[in-house]
Amino acid sequence: MKELQIKQTTLGRGKAKICVPIVETTDTEILKKVEAIVASKADMMEWRVDHYDDVLDEKKLLPLLREINEIRKDKPLIFTFRNANQGGVRAIESRDYSLLYNTIILGKLVDIVDIEMNVDPAVGQPLVQKAKQAGIAVILSYHDFDSTPTKDVIIKRMQHMYTLGADIAKIANMPKSQKDVDATVEAAKTLKENGDLFVAISMGELGEFTRVHATTLGSCLTYAALGTVSAPGQVEIEDLIKRMK
Image (cartoon, rainbow, N blue to C red):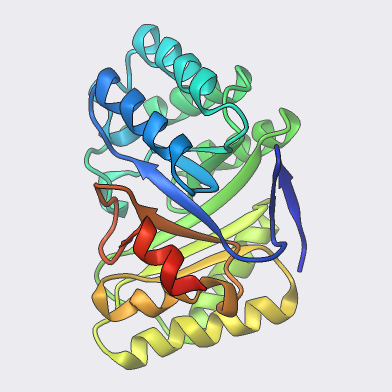
């Protein structure tokens, strides 16, 4: 499998790395969460900035991000605005999405950006290119909270992410049956054989297997909760660590 070095963490080597999302809404809550993640056994953190009350206020966002960086030190940080139609807590106009990500990328303030596949290509593609030029890794992601496509559709969708410049392809589907979970599992097995970096998640309680057994399936990352969850089916980090052994 390919490897991606982010600070002291190597994605694609050894076990799937554990990433804890930050979904708090205020500066104080966010900084407390960052401190808790640093003190935990998490390998990485993701700032789900769509939860932040002042996400579109650059004068508040950037100083807070610099404080986060001082606290997190060598723990890699993923920057994510999850749009409402992809499971986020708020919608955002394409123009604002572009301005937000451009600000973060040009400032080289994060290690990885998560860019949604359903963003207008005229917005998303330049962001991918600028991130790479800035030395920031790119996750291209797609979330379906209503259903799970077939194995072949999942594979095709993720392979398309690589053609668009993804360092990591991420897909999260909502299963309605074990057959749906199996589709994600089988797609993951194929992607693992190809050697590319990916994250394949079947959400909810039914899909918990894909989070706990992420390493076996080939996912380079698995997302865990530390008090608050950012998606259905996330397992508390201590429980996840025990079950991953």
